[in-house]
Image (tube, rainbow, N blue to C red; front, side, top):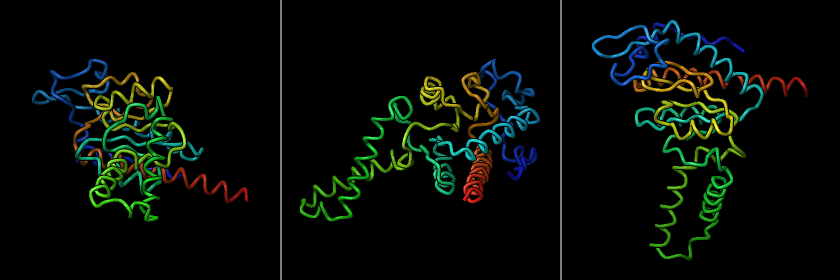
Length: 238
């Protein structure tokens, strides 16, 4: 796999070094902090950089091994980027709201995905043409609702093998589910979060759009490279 370059300068320019206010912090994050400035914690990005490299290496191997990876990021400023990156590289994603059971009760999620696909097929086949205008409007709305919540995970055939999380504190329900099912996680962990449940924590700002986009681009590039490794292997074996 081509080594992906991580720039400390780019991380700084994107504001990755700014944590939360010092009064809103988790002492477990102390080792990742450089100090504070104007009441805000500052991350030591020289410590963050090798952790990003380690996480990317893990994601590359997971992609190469054909693991099912899910990207989770529901913050308003990043949800479109999550969809863009995930769709480009062909992995599952959640960018609207984490639905309880996506990991702990996947059978129920699968039923909703199947319902969505069936309704879309019926719509395309003209099955709903006999319904009234009002009924068709309600059907259209239901399909749009299901697509919004389940469209990103419709490719999943079972629980994901790996979870990438933007803002582990915000997505605590997903983190809990992944821990119970022992699904390894890579997660962006800000100064107010607990890094312990995360296998590959990325200590940095989880609010700055530019910083999050920078990391998501790296993640996308890494997974894409890893998947090429799979394709190459299959091609070689043939």
